[in-house]
Length: 433
Image (cartoon, rainbow, N blue to C red; front, side, top):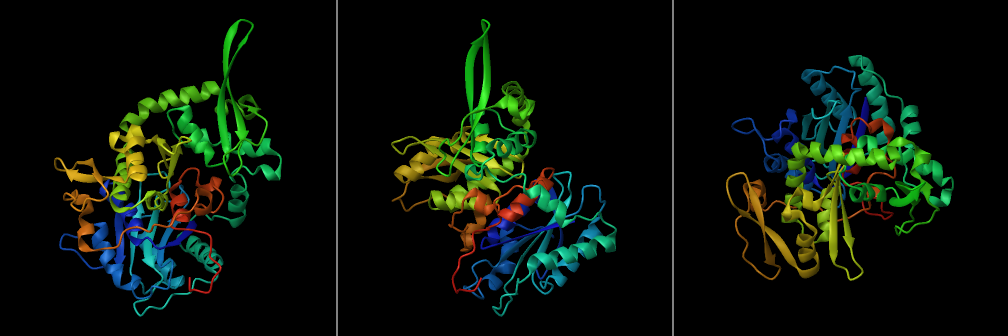
């Protein structure tokens, strides 16, 4: 069993992410502790949040009071709901959070059925529960649970070996060819995208770019790809490497087939609506580009913005690491096109939601100096209760993911979410963390 512990400041974001799974019938709430009951037994993110509110406000000095934990048995393990509940209770108790409020969500949208636990490390009297030696304690507890429930053991050694494979390219380390190979052979197998532009957006997160080359050989037109390593400023810092050096999956013909297959398959992609919901929430609640990106980043979604030399936004792409799909904004709808975000972030024309028909929303442009806002879609009802919105802190992709993409998660990129949950570089200062 693999455990991932995420710590941050965005309780509402963690709850919305998990509740969306429930609402889309890709998950369920298995268990709650110290959470206020509802009349019909059903919850919304805002209702769950209220049970944590007093804990979160008990000590404002704690910068990362939110826990977002995932417990992931091997896909071959057959764990029933009662066992999942017992495992969650045992894990939380032995980690020192047994008396805290928490919610156990079960996710069933991937082969690796697993649970998420959302809780807080601040007690009701404002004390912060110690997180010293979290990792070794968690590993020891997982080994105990594996033996108790006869689960397949996950070894730390195997995880460490896999983590070495998916670091972004670092041209300063040399052997660029091997670094490129470990990524371009892998990404097309596990991510879906519909164009070379979307593929390049994904590659850019790992300091790589691909370029199409055309030529003629013995009177026949030939097309192919070459790959380059990039530096931290996204500038080319290597000679070109032919795609043929990395196998068929990285080559031009295979990728063209990949594009065509996904153009058809993604027309019926169910996770698209979950992504749209997440983007709409971020558009409604954030005040600027930085806050918007951070809110989505904490849900495992990268936002890549492209600007021309004059600063105008001409492209925006969303990389959803939960579904492993790259979406150009315009593919999600005209409300998410580059022009909408350019008007917002460049001209202070923030898009606003208004009701159209039940269950649907639309956006309108509204000047930042206007005070009147039409009533929000019901998905945003929690905002009327004076509840806090998302954090506005922004981190880079590789900082938030700890600098690597472990192969152990290839079949279930859910776990990337947990490493991503509000994780930043530790600040070296005297305040309590």
